[in-house]
Image (tube, rainbow, N blue to C red; front, side, top):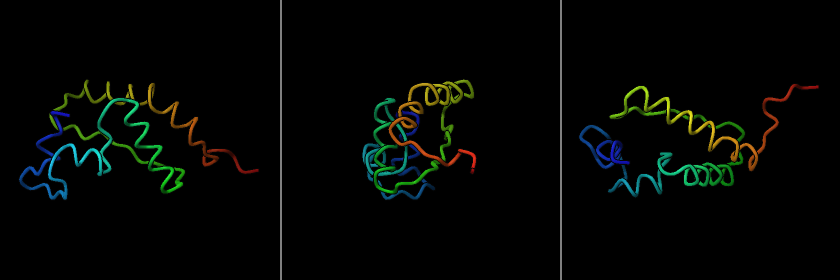
Length: 96
């Protein structure tokens, strides 16, 4: 959260409609928080939009490469299994 604060809380050159980092996390597309908070946000997106594909990236603001890799590993291990179970898709199945 602290790494992203200057970026998301109105850093010069970053056009944001959010007054605080908390607003940006709560109301914006940013996936910042505990694994459960990220799961809840992704499932909320799915409930609203019923989409089958979600693009995810890591903004490395203030994060070393190793920290970015660690975040992606945690996402893959702790978040993805729950999201896949709760919001299944047939997008990657072979057509028959």
